[in-house]
Image (cartoon, rainbow, N blue to C red; front, side):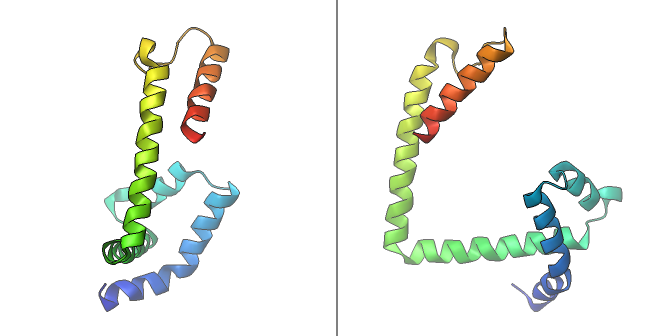
Length: 121
């Protein structure tokens, strides 16, 4: 990352922490923050700084992934487990092609709950 980009991250650090904390504590809605960042077709400096920091984190992760056989293996093992569970939940919801019943709110909640438990089990 260029020095200019790191300077932007440093300058916006306090604002980045402020927005992250507000999201974590639930004192701000994600949509409201995103609206603020994209108002008047001008990119907000904190938004730019978050994007640059995200690029740096992604680059660091990719470098670790490419150089660590252990990390590579661990990720692929976990992906295989997730794919197996996706196959199982697809089988459970096969009759409705994965669609939730639209009749009653209670039925939807129950179907979603079963689906989520299958995903995390």
